[in-house]
Image (cartoon, rainbow, N blue to C red; front, top):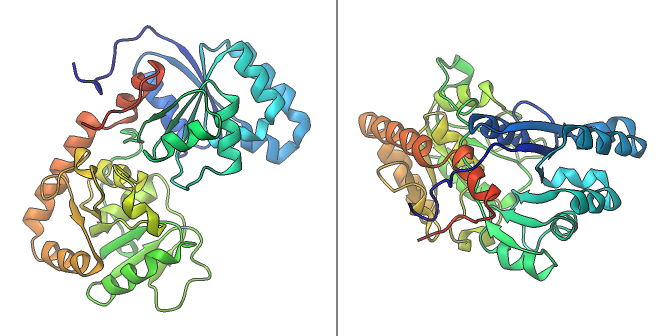
Length: 329
């Protein structure tokens, strides 16, 4: 057994506290828990507090108590409970915080969650040491993964989703724009995602947020699905795997993303996906793979099979439950 093999575990009751919604990460975590034989419940802390205000917090705490969890797993949206409630839950239950953002240093909300819970897991390897510096009792690296129940190929894609190249991501990060413009000059590009309302008119924005089946249809309609770092410093984060990559691989798309150190631990270039080192190389690889449909389709099939075999949430959760991080060999 390698250090990343899922250890055997007895069934647990796992409460996942964060934001509700079928296509949000807490729901993916709960589905993975159930697939492993655990009992799981998502408690939409963010949604209830937003709708009803702070007075609903004691009711949410009582809901946790009635569930009688063995483990309380927070995402950052669990901060809506407030520090006193977080501290009280940590005294009574085993608590962990799974952090999905690559921003450095950790945001004040993330730092508070790390200090209030028993252990922190982060998808950004360089943040492990930073969470320890801000007071986390322990911190581990744990990337996201594929949710097989949602991240699966679409049966078809309508004409509005047809494109040579697709980028799905938020629009508030100018660092991406030069890459997107360069690709748009050489191929038919569609950009989808939130936050593009203020984008410059030369960017081919085709629509807003796409979730679940809409995400899968957009991927199915594209020959190449592009990855792009949000921030310049992310180009130097080792083993930095965007959640976009996992979703694209799960949906059977051909993924072309930015290379960082150790990224081929997750997916190998030319076998499961393709990696670029610069904007000119990204443009050249777009043209190369647009001209090679059989090679592109072979790589996409292998990428999906590899992700399902090694990189799902069901592969990640046993490590979290055992208090272990993911090891990059």
